Image: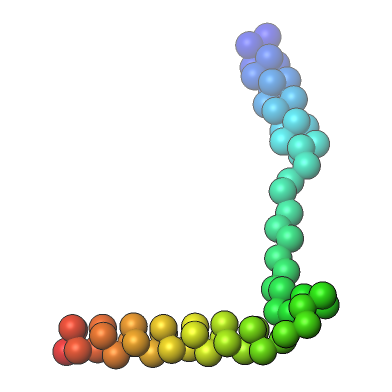
Amino acid sequence: MRSRRIALFGTLALVMVLAMRHPSADLRILLHDRADLAPHRVQAAVDLGVMCVSVLITWTSHRFA
């Protein structure tokens, strides 16, 4: 009788887990807004990011050399 209860609760837990809605990721990369009349802002952001990475690489290479 005890093993039946364990099997029943295990089956019930499995059904509940399978019935749950699993989260899904919504990954979007927004590079340009259609309403933006100045797309050069996007290029400026990219340039700033590249410069920051360059400074970080330069700084860490001297630090760990």
